[in-house]
Image (tube, rainbow, N blue to C red):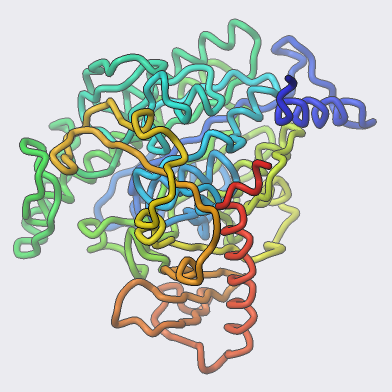
Length: 508
């Protein structure tokens, strides 16, 4: 039987080749004009945690240079305030609630059309390196990177630190000695070197394990931040102990010293990647996209000028750093305040290569933004941190055999006594009124409506003018009730669409 997704992508590509005026794509490296694509994502790096945003301590010279040479998106958002859902949005262009990736350790569904599947059908060699966290990476998992379209992968079910144990193409975990960000870049370069010999364009996803806690670093990176413990002598935070894997209370200055060492090491690894692209003559036609998966965790919020943190739909939980380099198509440096989100990545890449996904998408193509032809988003961005507990308690059957959802790659942080992570996803035959709840927000231009911000002291509805009040301090709900009403109506309609997708209707 012919796979319908592959047929649709193939037909789209053939149609584009036949359109007069579009460049033809040859088979050799000289005639192939398709861009190489590298997507890099930090794990828990907050919006302010770069030098180019004036962070008081952090040393990130590579990201700073990217921000001054490429396209810097100052209003770029994670689709979710937590990790697994955001990663699902990158892969699918859809809000993760459409396919049950509600929170950390909730898997994607095998029926989803991913950007790797699309680009693979379009002739790209696809590799994944690092954190996966939308299902187990083992060989028999129906949601491992290979099953979702990647030709090769060296990946982890969740996050990792120094000397990580990673799975190569679904095999048993292997020890990789060294700093994890450097390891991922080195393995990505090996992959690129190989596929270049086969004259294929490449699509590489590098999802770092940094700077997610627990924290560690090289001595020379730690030494750069030796002054921090005395800056915060009395403030304590809860993090994971590297020795026991259990929660421990520690001074925040000590924790930040280790966290910032991880960010600096990740920044240096990005520099290694950029230098490789330059030396090999690949930089001009390689789209290099860097962002984070959610906002700052509690221990990092001490420097954050925005409201909220990881897990919240305020700016501090959703807004993340984002820089894009592509000298061939973005030749001049630009700073944009255009509202964009991780769900935009798939439709953007599809637009660039002339492909499409036969599903309802929540993202839009940013290609016109790259070309400086788009100033305003045509529709609002909706955020929704779904309350997954009621769905899990209804007793509906799992979407995937639980044995196939068991993780294998170990990590330091224990959960229920396990040093691995298992995943869940459930059938959802019908929606309930309670399912429309949970922290949610809708962003349209300068205005953002927040409903149920997640803290009891917050008003149930808050309207903010982010242009005048980026820290979300002034609730304008009484001053602009018509704007709030319009945004809430849009949000409710969108939620209904999402819940219809959650039943599996998009797969039929």
